[in-house]
Length: 113
Image (cartoon, rainbow, N blue to C red; front, side, top):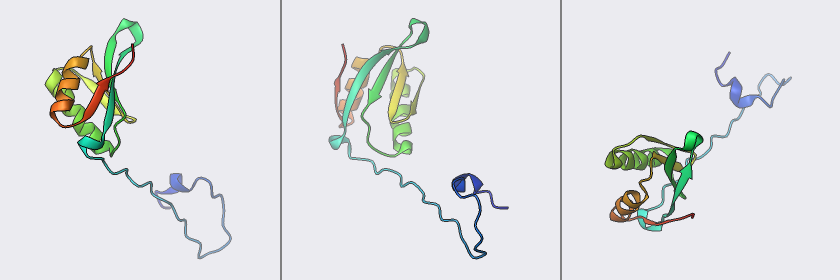
């Protein structure tokens, strides 16, 4: 049995012996140039009263998002994550993140209250 059974969960049974399951792979989104990105920098409160800097609005592949997140975390000297189109950095580092992104050529601004 093939290992692609999860991709064809909607098909239960076929009586055609020549039937082939066709799965559509989602195309990875192409990454826009830094000058075309419009990023928003938010301050978010997490559980337990902790704060985090959140970068939203990135348009591109998850690999490029992870690379940008890694660079920001390294430059700020803190931990965080990059997933679902957002980069979350532990602590309030909005000014530093804006400075780093502008230096890299991104259009960004602080958002929220």
